[in-house]
Image (tube, rainbow, N blue to C red; front, side):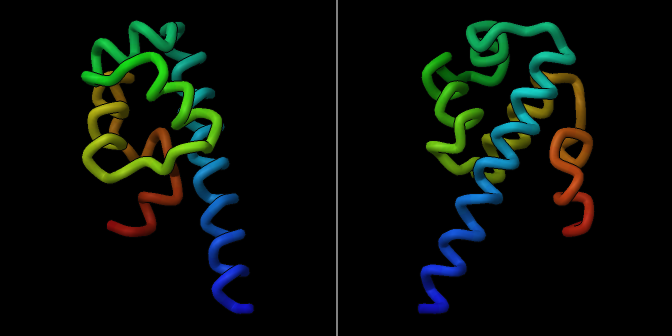
Length: 83
C-alpha cells in the first residue's frame, strides 16, 4: 500500500515539474519546437515532459534549463533544496 502512495506522490511531482517547465517556456516566449531544438529534444518530448507523461532526468533538466537561459533551480525551485 505504501508503494502506491509513493507512486502517487511521484506522479504529482512529475506533473508539477511539467507545469513549471511550461511556465518557464511561456515566459521565455519559446515554442516547443524552439525549446526542443535548443535542448536537443523533439517537440513531442517537450509535450511529454510538460504534460507529466514523462519524468525529467537530471541531464534533460539541465539541458532544458540552459536552453531557457536559466539554472535548473530557477525553473524547478525544489531542486535548490537538493544542493
